[in-house]
Structures are given as structure tokens and as C-alpha cells.
Image 1 (cartoon, one colour):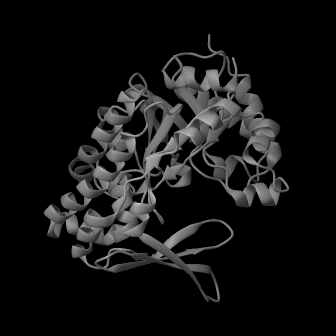
Image 2 (cartoon, rainbow, N blue to C red):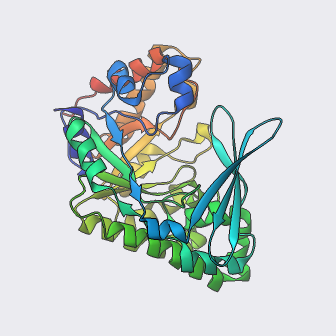
Length: 365
């Protein structure tokens, strides 16, 4: 099988020729620090992983941009690279500040400073259209790769899921409090973000995506309770999953962090796959074998590998052993893609090669 065929077979909960092995986003820091600035496809080839090609093209008309004009200003900061964004609308200018270091970026000033600002989003925030030409050109040029994208997040900084997106522009702590103090406002805000995502999905006809990502870490049980998940996450993301699948595209629900209390809750939403199955030793809570027993017959499982302890400061033999443990825990019957549980920054290329090579030796009986 080609890498793409292997990944698609697993996503459809079947047994490929051997254990599929890949990774999520490849961080620019890693590529520059450990691979001399190689690109993503060079990484997959040199490491021996089943390749994924990420492509996203969110398009807006000039008329949309007129009422939602984004301006960026670089601010002076002694420690972090800092950008301030201004969203100019006919009614009000909203602001948001992002900071970053060599590893990653984060929000230091949230967009929504008053709850009534969601009225600005409802009136003026545009819904993007899928760039079909860009997406299909990528699918043609990278026919050996799984073609992956995501549901659009908020323009400046966000996550694909509705709850997760709102957390990025309002602040997760304040948002959790609002579920108790003003749940009607939370639902109203979520509906506004959901509408934008559904309108984008309406434009996906003919787009040759294999899979789109939904979700995000702010819906993990490391952050929120199962009760909040059931009331404010699942009802808004489930229609998005169904709408994408009606376009003939698979959906993976991304939850980095705690998952065990809501495994069935996520599976009930109907995604084709779930990730990241973060191990306990990395701050998650996943027992891979128990997760396989509980939901492995319903969805493809992606992730489960402890990249923090087995991509650095260990021997190749220890990395190989951990690969085997993951395969034994979740590989039976197929429907499992071995992958690091989300991003990694520092990693020894020799250990990644051992990770990929050992996975290639995991053959289904």
C-alpha cells in the first residue's frame, strides 16, 4: 500500500498491510533546529512516515473584507514577539494581541472584552469560502499523501471547534464561568461561530479533502467537565461533523489532554476518527487499551505515543519497545494510526526513524 492508502484504510476502521504511522503538524522549530530547514514532505520521506499534506485556503470577497478589515501592528516587547490586531467594522473596532517565541504562539489579549461584542461578530464577521482550486491542486500534486485540513477557526487565532474557538477569543476561564453565570450568552455566541463554520462547509462541494479536523484542546477534560462538554460542545460540533460527512469528507475530532471520561461522548458525535490519546506520563489520562476496548469499534484512533519521553533522551530500543506497546494496546483489528499525541518541538531524528521503522514491522495477523 501507499502511505495514503494505508492511512485511509485505517480511517475506515479496516486493517491495512501494516500499522500506519504518521504525525500531526510538524513544527517549524523542529525542522529548522534538527533538519536544516527541510520542508514537511522532506521530513516524511527522510523519517519514513506515512505522509500527510495539509492544505487550507479560506477565501473572502472584497465586499466581505470591506466591513471586516484586519490591520496588524508589531509592538515592542522585551521578551516576546508581539502583534496587535485591529478588526475595523462599521460599528466598532475590536482588538486582539498575540505573542510568540521560537516554539509557538498564544493570545495575550482576547478579542471579546464585552459580552455585547458578539453582536459585532454576528453582523460583520464573514464566512470564508473554500479555495477549491488550491485544495484540488494540492491533492493532485501530492497524490501519495493524505490530504488534510481543518474547519475554519477565527481569522486571527482560534480552533476548529465552536467551544474551542470561543475560548480563544474570550478566554477559557471566563468562558467556563459564563456557563454558570450566563449560559444563554454562551449558547448565543456558539451559534454565531457555528453558523460561520457551516456556511464554509456549504462551499466544500468538489473539494478533494480526505479528512478535516474539528475540536481542540479547550474541550478536553483536563480543562472542562463532562457536563460542560455535553451541554456546550457536543450540541454545536455534532451538526458540523454531519455536514462535512455529507460532502463525502471524513472528520477527525481533536482533543489534546484528558479524554477518558468523554470517550463515548465524542464517539456519539459521529466522527470518523479521534485524536490525540495523550498518555498519562505526558499530562493526559489515556489508557490506550481501555480506549480501544470502549470506542475502537466505532472510530479510528489516532495518536497514543509519548513523544516527550521516547523522541528524546532514550535509546532507539526503548522507542521501538514503546511502539510495540502501542500496537499491542490498540492495533488489533485495525482502525489505529500510530502518531505522537500532538506536536513535538525537540526530538532526535534517529528516534523518529526508529519509531517509523518499528511501526512498519507491526504486521496484522
